[in-house]
Length: 450
Image (cartoon, rainbow, N blue to C red; front, side, top):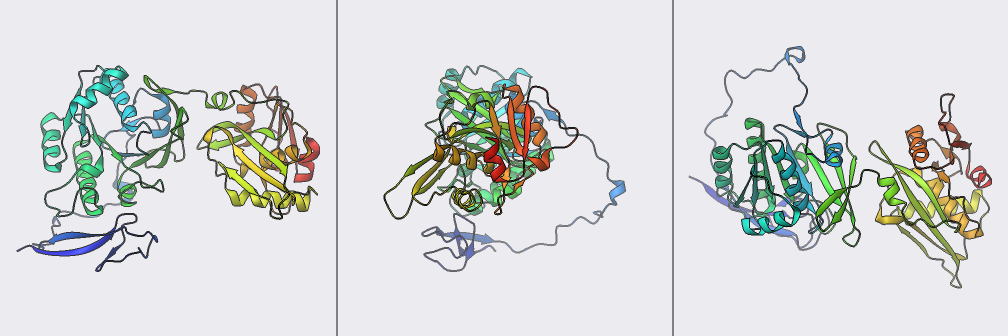
């Protein structure tokens, strides 16, 4: 007979304990420990088949994945070439960022290829989805809608319709009757995702599930969802900005950290095939404190503008602020400029901004940030046709960055004439027409070259 017991689970990180706590010991969140009723059933054997045996590596045959294009080249780039049959994909993002809009646009493209799609929504009625589809121009007859949250009913619908693709919006609303916890709890999400994984692997159906995010930006559930699925995509971007970034943080069938760039319009999401040109629109020229750099997002080079403002302060403690870049990194660069380049910034407030709402974590922006700060401090503009990138160490040295030639090629495509890069990145085969490349060894040489 089933025996019921309770446990306490953190809704943020999944930490489990036998008693209630006000603060989670694992993630430090307050008020996130919730009680869940767990039903346990005595095991009736090991469940292992007698003919199961391990295989030698040489006995296992492989074949190329069967990829299906979504019809959106930016999304295909992030997925590594398209959707893989039998894959489980998780799409996360803040409410209103454009997840449901993107999925409906995918349905139209897949329907034009003759693929059967089953769209299951636990948050909206079919009429609400139809209203959005009319606004976006979705008219395919290969798309079927179902408003359901019961996992058993969802599985029966999949078995009956036999679709090629299934979309679940969202996984937090799905529940299993065998689990006593409330929908949206860690146990319910884990069991429902496990069931969907079994469905997609056994039937060869590609399943896309939508996941809500917590206040800190991670997918609610918590991280157990990211470990179970094949691909994790995050929708990023400020609601006040028109562009959206779709980033792959996990992909068993392709590269990670690839990004796709979209623009939110009244007719849905529009692909931005040349994001570098898009990011540099309305860039000021002949103004101090601004410089163009090239960052790598996955395998895609992206030209972005770095701005800095240095202003005198009458307070004893100068203010440092950073938007789009790690604050601690900016503080280190200010110290390097003072120690290695002789630029006194102790009486000046310093503000650094990556334009367009972008957030870049790679250290190749160091040289551009240092150059922008020096330019604003001396009020001397940097030539607008110059691109600067490179990592700066604590001793002021310029360190090599990966894929330098690809970055310079991207700058050449957009008409930039001069690139200042680490000298360690220059070799005999580094020759790109139309661009003058200057190699520097330290931050002093960088400022001299400007």
